[in-house]
Length: 287
Ligand SMILES: [Zn+2]
Image (cartoon, rainbow, N blue to C red; front, side):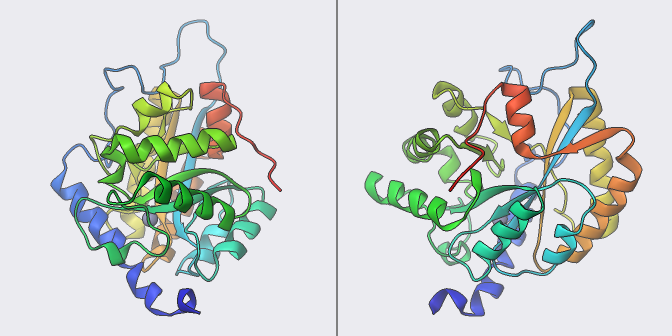
């Protein structure tokens, strides 16, 4: 079967490299803590008299589905994480089921066309801006059908697609129809995903900090400190790490970060944030 071909292993090594290039090229890519956006889309700071809730952190781990390095280590982390699974790969279904059994949230990690980079880096079922409305809808629906227990979608690569109103309109409409939400991985600082999600009545969820733009456990642990800082300042923080060629190092960095943070912040699934921050209930029980 084509999807079982080992070349996917190689192909999946590249997106991280592309992401790193992007974060270098685009200063506002979400690798550092930044202020609440002026459009009011950001987390709300805690107000006087408001009931004091612990600051919360949602750790999303991308690129599951291809039995990549670090998969076991991520599943063994001592806190709740969110598992983003690429569709149509050899361990897509298995990883989604395992995550669900552990009580972790599952997202479809949908391959989407980047501004730079080769389409063949994307993996099967990718959404491209050259596709017709009908083809895009079909691809989104098939990806959702392929990953059991998914409560939402986030983008794999996608710096081009998340800036495209036509394509994002279709992706978000399918999310809405199915009672799901979209998490903007934020590979494009000109993304329209958040604004369009709000217009459609969906929660404008986005990644704030990439954990592993530099591949060492030490760097990841340092990024976890930024995550804590942002969560304490702005009530919550969404952060993304990856399984893959350096997946074990990323997992080790997250684990060591957790050890120093667990008394100060609460680790939650992305669905917990969506429910409490935007009062939005995803369709949590799926067939
Ligand atoms: Zn990815």
